[in-house]
Amino acid sequence: MTNRESIRVWQGDITTLAVDAIVNAANSSLLGGGGVDGAIHRAAGPDLTAFCAGLGGCPTGAARITPGFRLPARHVIHTVGPVWRGGEHGEAAALADCYRNSLALADAHGLRSIAFPAISCGVYGFPPETAAHIAVANCRAALAGPGTIEEIVLAAFDQRMALLLSEALGQPA
Image (cartoon, rainbow, N blue to C red; front, side):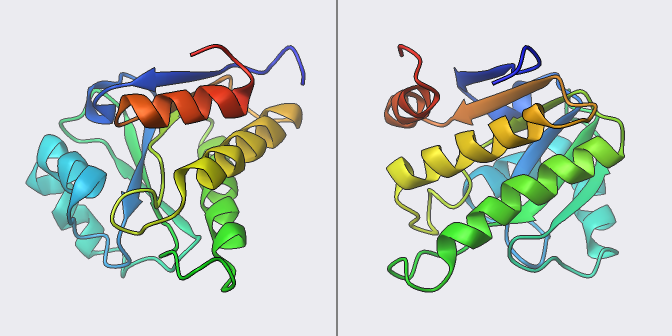
């Protein structure tokens, strides 16, 4: 850990956070869907979907950046998490790529604060306990190296996810 480390768990609606970027757990089309993806598209307004239509999609593990439009966040970083297929198909590595690539994109754009949802933990079925540890490890690694990011918010959609993220950070819930 470094004195740069500022990772905190927050429970609530990620679309309300006034950070430099929120991360969208998107599908490969980037055109909106269910869960956090649909919530972000609804909150940002139709300009987000129109902008995303010009990006040509996004493969699993990669990340793309867009303006935040009507969101309090200045940007949305879209990443496509893996669908859980039992854990023997590179799911953990793909989820780690989501965090690493999103953080690298934020750094490349000079962003200082970013908020992540629990990527792949909804309809994609990734085990939340494992996902929490992957999230924390990759966020800590990004803060340990050089870069512009100063604050990472791990946004939990419910109390159980908030507890798992807090445990992975080694903090009391």
